[in-house]
Length: 292
Image 1: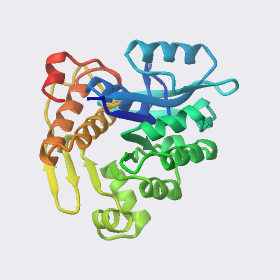
Image 2: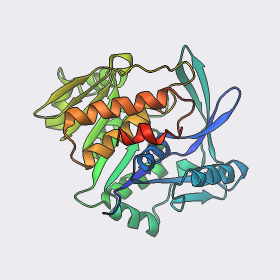
Image 3: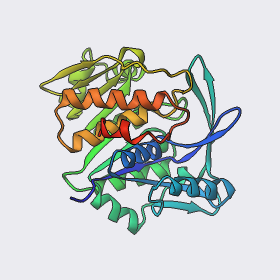
Image 4: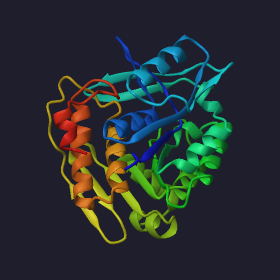
């Protein structure tokens, strides 16, 4: 059986911590974890023709990722994000007018769109009109069976209400946190955000992540609540944990795993990532075999 193709469409960048840097960007993180779980996780992004870009491509390739869909920009630099950790939680300062703000719909990207079994995307890479248009065109070229997963992933000030709404309109699955859930309530004016997403925005599956309170998975027929799976995170951080969850969620939705198992395993996988530093830690085979 061919491995499902899961494209991470959007930003790839360096997460720059006070003492070190690690590869990151939500779609690239999802592609990494999708591959780690046994899929063909493919990052579709853009880096600068610079030292940061070359180093990033080498690192992603060393993780076994297919980097042939990462474009090079002759002018704009490779993206970076300054990450600050306080009490285990991350805050971010994101550089602007970088390579992934200039995504281009190439013929190879159209081929990838048509081949993809799932595409994971978010709002951040849509902050610039160029990449916003490219992402929407990419999604328009996917097959009718392709699962489109939107991780709302709001980062001030890089979004508008219109970007959020259009992102949801393009998605089959929406993942968001409690703060984003509240913001959707304000944007939609709806008393019941779940019903607004399912009935008015035609989303099929909603995933609400709640930090230490676990996660919820909602469809028209089911509402599942899964508690957090505690691990020792004293040597880890929260960077990329949500992306790990998204990858595991996508992995099991594609395999039509029962939803109660899907949310439980996604939670466990994310907890394992939280116990380690950076957005792309390699998990032991014994851990992976129990989660995939």
